[in-house]
Image (cartoon, rainbow, N blue to C red; front, side, top):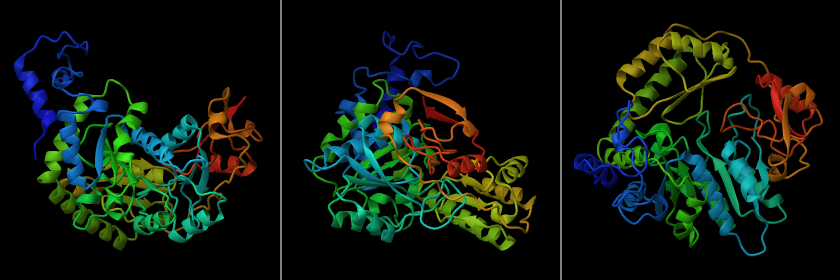
Length: 446
């Protein structure tokens, strides 16, 4: 597959042009990559008015993913989330309410978008008991009940899958429910860009999502900030045509060409060796997971390239298990008091997997029951997200916030279930949840 952005940058470098244009480093500097860091010079195309090399590269990505249209982001999935909500909002029937039905474990950027777009949010709460703020299981039955209980249909249903712990929603069933009611399904698939390239494609686009974002940099060989916005082939009419405008609303006018080049190069990798490497690592990690289970470790989630250890159920504190792994030369993605999350990719090799196994061999599962966490807090909403987030605010110790109105997302790690959302009142249950998760301070409306 051609890589037009990468080819252009190589050619521009060879030409040795005197750079009387931005950036100020003029292609020179201590990092060694400055020569590739350009702006929208002649022939380089422009991200939000793409007609040349960027447009061709995005078309290549769309073919690889089987989308109706795929656009690049150099500002992560956060930019894509804002754009997806804008597109879905623009698509709502005349006179309908600007209300979105969303899984409670939405990334902070979702809440920021709700404030910017002045959205009303109805929440899909976690089903079943769980200790982690990072998990929010949503079943088709639960979605059906929530939609039936609403006086007016939302303009979109928004979920996060896979979640931070590696749980994967039944996208096909959720999509069928949404489409039967004429509602688009919007999916934050930040952690699952690779899913289309497994032996059996299981990317949200493959399963019925209308709009979807992927953080390419999380699981593919792409520089930090590289992401995709996907519009499905069956998405409501007009979304694909309006997508560039929606992205431009929230994106910098100075996108990183280094990040764009890495997205472009990733197309070549995905068209070649990438899928085979992804499948090989998924198979190797599956064997490693089976061995850990045999040893007595309790695991969580079913995402193929993610290993999540339920440390608390294995007799450990998650942060202490994380420290043990670091001593063994393994740096986890995340560790809190209950869980340890480790992420692999197609660039993880056999030596890395063996090192991971050896690090776990330095410890062993212990007996004991995890401490029961306080139940999820359903705070009383007294302000809109926008009103609370844009009000004058102050940060105070959580014990001093009782009865005050939360002004910023109160969460330990995104994407996660916020203990409170902007506009909700801090009650005693929220204070207890803060203490359990080690959160000492909270922003409240003055």
